[in-house]
Length: 476
Image (cartoon, rainbow, N blue to C red; front, side, top):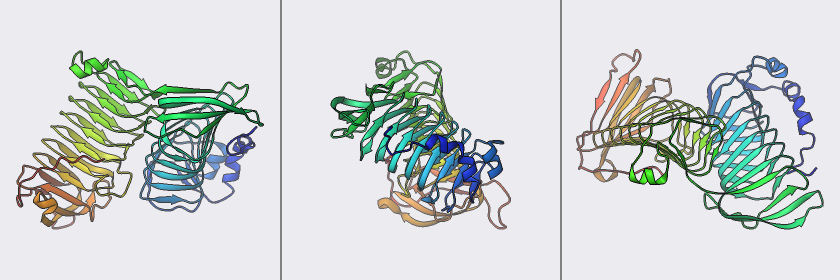
């Protein structure tokens, strides 16, 4: 049977995976970790050692983040429901997701990606150099990035809302392939000598990418299905658990577009996002609703309103996070690609996760406006910190200092400070910049949470120099 690429012996080889892997040096991750350095041996997530891997005993389910352009030269395997988020990195050779594992890629490069055994992969800006193949009831969601070619097999499901594809696409056995966009269609072109019908694709995906000129090879006589879905918003007026794909944007707290536009019949449901969930575009949360995100991925922005409460424990957001109207957001484990903005009496507490899929000091930044409050004690933040209007930023750590380096930054609008010391999680803030709006009520607090070095005390800061100004920039 033809597949892209040819992998006839793969299922049999998997039976020996533990034995072949334990025959050489490997690095194991059985507990939560952040990988920000290069690793030259195969990486195993979900087991503590080779004996456990070969016997499939004592499996664990840690959360692991790959950041800072880390390169894994000998591949990566994810087991036992473990969750791996790649915010910036390169996995050479093969990345295997098995045993209900979860992979989220906000930004990264992978040579070969293969999903098995009810695992899930959410790809918003992944570049797959050679191929992507899904098997055994696994689920893959693609909203951006580039994939050289893919195959959908063995009861697996692939949802495609965006991205570019360099080669042809294959669908066989009982696989299901969903395309989301406008004007989508497949026209029979020719039979294929290897038992596949060749279908010419056309139309535009939800992200604006074109399928024109691409071909899909669908196995003759199989139960494989391909569907073309219009991009529609989905409303959640009642409590719900998402472990499936939502077509375009998800709106929580209203039953219809009319109710949302007219602000009538508000509801306040509790909605949970699990590992298999996928929102193609924005997730918008209204009316004192509550969201718990333990996994899955949001294809664009997450915005909260009306005193809603959002707990972000896992998964990924490929756009920005915007907290409005007295919302409360707790970020402890989710990757947010394009920065965090707190406005209008909202409170954002950051105790983990990752902000910024690039090294840009702006795109991965944290902004506090109006009367909002931002608390930071942990997490990987790629960008700088901004506080304006009557907002407050609290940074918790040991030995924290803020040294003024420019009282007239951004055309006299902000005072620029350089930070030093360590956060409460032990990570250094040395060299990170903090911007405080001039002639405003904006302030920052550097709060000691342990025994600081002698002579260093908590600091309360406010910029009182420069001209009055107001910046309302949102990360892209």
